[in-house]
Length: 225
Figure 1 (cartoon, rainbow, N blue to C red):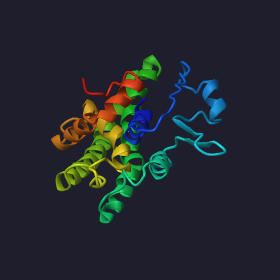
Figure 2 (figure 1 turned 180 degrees about the horizontal axis):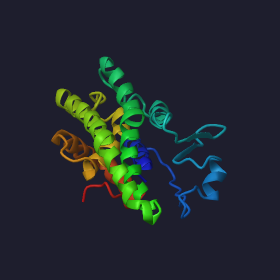
Figure 3 (figure 1 turned 45 degrees about the horizontal axis):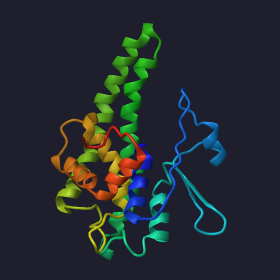
Figure 4 (figure 1 turned 90 degrees about the vertical axis):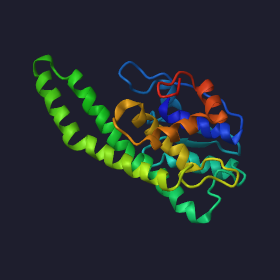
């Protein structure tokens, strides 16, 4: 749900019809056969675009996730959802890739170190917990804080959308990408963050298109109450 919601948000902003098909992961979190039949690697989300001869199939990977946004905006955006100021196009590219290439790996590492102790054999669990806690405190948390302060500094200098928004004030690709990492970080996963980060998330959540995406996507733990 976290990854797909930002795709749904973009689809709702674009105002194009789509069908949402959900594939439930198996108890071991592996992809079900129904998903592997569509995408052999079991990667989700998958966008299957039948808008032209020969369905276009786009699937998730950490190095290619911005391609969802790029493809949809270029094909269906009609000139919208791209920075109104040409000088901000580099910001759009930078933050689109910063989300998955820099910020998310740190947040995922923090999550993994919180899960490992519970899966360790009972007798060594205290030792594993101590090691994971030490690594998180010494390395992961400072890295996360540094990156999130970097994001907050950008928002302070450039209030609003990450690349300034389009001519009508709509978000651009960078904003769709940065949504989930900032949702995760401001949910309590990383303490003592600059208030600008939560304010940015709240602004995105207030978009009618986001609310429609949330309604269609189903329960989501990072959504505002």
